[in-house]
Image 1 (cartoon, rainbow, N blue to C red):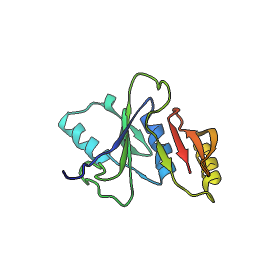
Image 2 (cartoon, rainbow, N blue to C red):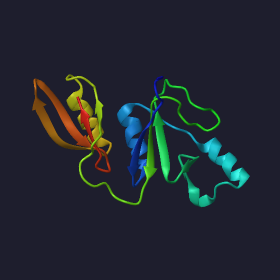
Image 3 (cartoon, rainbow, N blue to C red):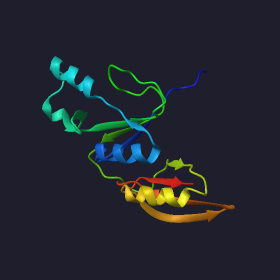
Image 4 (cartoon, rainbow, N blue to C red):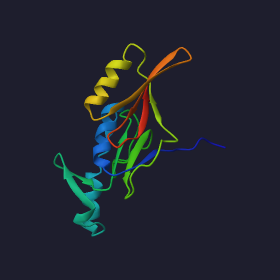
Length: 150
């Protein structure tokens, strides 16, 4: 069997807000779908209800994505072809603890400063965990999705 390409999809209420937070948290680039949206508008495939404008560019109202800056992407659609996180709007709110989460590895010398930076972006420190000779900070993004800073 060959390796499978994948992306992490996050259900959320505000995809544009979470894409902004996670692009800063990960050092990723926001995907630019404006050219693709323009083409779809020209074909009559999408309406004004499907998109909005952010920083002078057309963006999807209900979806946004971030990608690793060194990975390839499709120039026609702006979609990343490597490491990426897609944020999709859903009507229901988050319930309970995540069963899957991201660990951000900065190293012990940067851990606290990065947790502080992520807090300034809208994240929240939930608790500090010291176990098995290691320390990490459990945080939540602006919609309450947990992640760890190590």
